[in-house]
Picture 1 (cartoon, rainbow, N blue to C red):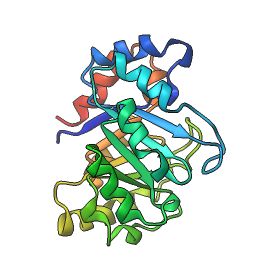
Picture 2: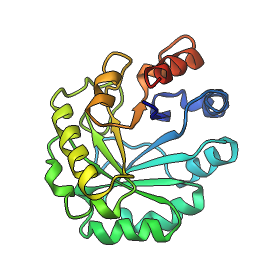
Picture 3: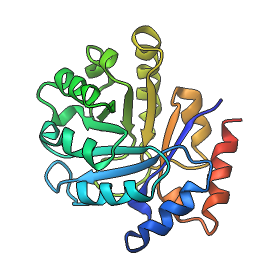
Length: 218
């Protein structure tokens, strides 16, 4: 089955982001995944709007921006202006999630909602119709290179059931510990978009590794 592959720039060499972006642009990767962390919602700090804007200048592929921050509503328009095509916020960080998703759509971006490993799939039932994407975190957010949490498959299957019932066009994305080994099981469980960081950027031949991922979907 065809799926979206979104390499995570969190695992790229931050001193050579332009080179990483240009390499990815020459591959069959679909999106570029950008993790934004504030040191409050998650115990780490990464890049913000100025870096997203700089990435936009060089990237030919859509920017899949994942906000791991508190009060994301404050920054919706600024990330649109920076060049985000998809903007994903956390259910755990939004007081009025329905409104937040609608604001993202109104700003002209695809609206995504992410849930942490401890958050049950059922919290999405009343908002899934307002989302373009659901992102299942299969590690605790904040750092790259963590081990995949095995019970994520169960959550993915539950969200797939909601997708089939309420929003058939939903993109079901998984982020955290994604590898060539577990990608087939993730896709068969219902995912149709995968975020991969270390599994791609640790490879000696990044384009070949991306092609190996994409071959899984054929």
